[in-house]
Image (cartoon, rainbow, N blue to C red; front, side):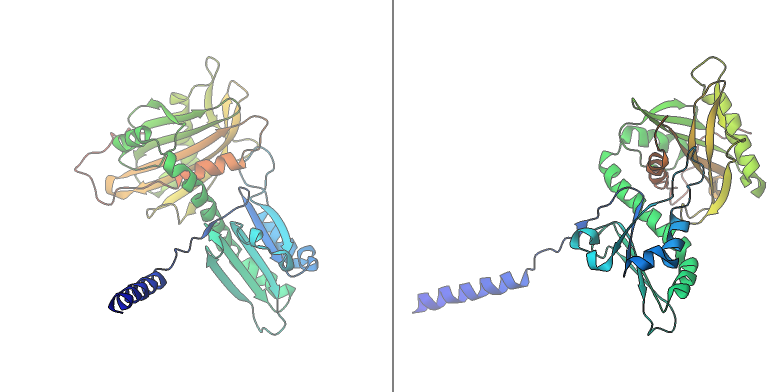
Length: 344
């Protein structure tokens, strides 16, 4: 009897322990093509009507700075009745809903609701007009967060592929960090200027990093940023034929600059446009971020460019954007060590 009681007690303890240890709930990995948003509507009329028109006009507008027309995002649409478990795993979701009982629109945002990484936005409004008005208020923040989700997905791919030889050379040269995946190599390092390349059969991607002294805010206007860029490209990046060199396209697509708030804690200006090769026929898009490093009295520019003749280029450029967004200045000033600054 004692033996039976002993084994019964052990069994009860094991059952209790097993009930306390819950299996780990894992969030599914998100799916969806690069630069794609899934719009969920209550019916086809909403997609064909004012809400769908507003969504397409904003998210499907051309990405600035590309040599051919490509939208910011591809837009896919399904009705809520077709929102299966598979579609719930989409990385970027925008939900449209009308509810006549509401007096004013309601905005809901969720991160990693059904998958990871994932952004889900829902606007519920009394009617189409109020839905569109609320969308116009929220669309810039939606775009910023959808872009962040895209970068997170790409970096989840790149992070295990980090090339620490290149990463360490960047940090040793400039004193900042940039997560660079395998496939890139340092083509030129001049101390204040570095050219990093990835050369494949049908396309090329490149990173251009450089520093210069920071005097005042005039150094950050568009014309000055382009002037400095061109002077450095002329000196450091030759074209394929003698006398040719990389430059900034200023005739068909003008370079545009704007302040961005989510790139770095420091003041940052984003510049988008096209590069070309003077003396040859090569061209493509570029994306640059110029950061004010006040502790060292310098401007840091990190740039990515794409060369992919005959191919769409938006997603290649988005890949470089994800890499550039890993830019990180050290928390504390180093022991007086910094790369030499060259007067421009």
